[in-house]
Length: 157
Length: 335
Image (cartoon, rainbow over the protein chains, first blue to last red):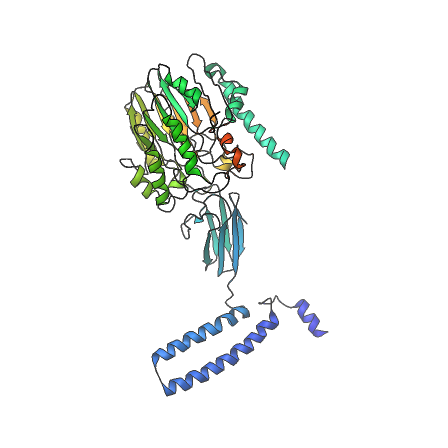
């Protein structure tokens, strides 16, 4: 009963898979301990900088999927379609760190060109894609430099 | 939804026709003539300059006869929107249809003095597309070919490759002028530095150049301006117009005869305003819908066996008082 109330009234969860996230945290710390122990033994026996760097990279690779599942450095991916000389959706609100991918579904080339030239694609032919990851909050208006009547904006919060 | 689209179309046609009606005493065009004109389709236009007045005729056997008759002045041909590299419905063979247009030019009894290509030579500004167009047009019997860029010719490099190949000796982004047998021709560029939400754009530098370019000419000099995007507002919702065209036209107000030739919209539209005649030409590649009749101005898809008839099906006879402005079209299939 208490548990039910907690779920209904509690703050939004960071992850849409709270149980999986918890499991991954446990898993992460277990792996971390294993690797730390392994590193320590290797440093003692070898001490090679190259091996250390290689191991650190392995640690980073191992940790990335778990940390993103846990939600603290989550990377979203969102798509904007270009169809019938329109960006859809024309205004898109995304969290910081979101990778936005535009896909041209028209028979003619279009571009994705930021008004302040912060980002810009080459001419995208049919089915060509362009991606940009938004790392800072703000409003980013853009247009098609070939057909400037086509405009859109990404709002990063 | 269908009804809405039809309403938009009718409103546009009536607005256009109304404009012509206001100029009835000047040009003799009635609403029926204008509507016929709207439906006109073809592949190339022969322009005849006679006594300072331009007459356009679509290339056809009929035109061949007309061109054979004695005339004061000279002739030239306008082609547009070849889109070499486009390979989708309704025309997977844009090279083939360009070749057919060239064959019609070469079949004229009197070779035109030159050809104007009003832009979108290529589809994606690729080197091989420009190569193919250049090679194909070498087979024309015209003395020279003059170009202006379309937005498809200046992708990815701000038009550098276009200018290196087709704009040698031009100013700025590729604008220039020349005189031919008493007529002053001005090629403008309105596909560069386009502003978000805007239309075609000429820009301050080009406008300054234009004002200076015509300053020395007498009012009686016939002027022909050619540029890719229409220099009059055909349909702003689809970007079919040029934001600062009014400024350019203000420099040409004092001239007795100004003809503006554009492409971009892959269909014939015409308007006469005072001493200025505006015309847009067919594409040699694919048709585009009439304003407001489709969700977007993208290529209009027609069945393969209809392509040539869409490109050149409807005939228009267009007679203007004593200064004949006669337009006769034919299908690309030759009927």
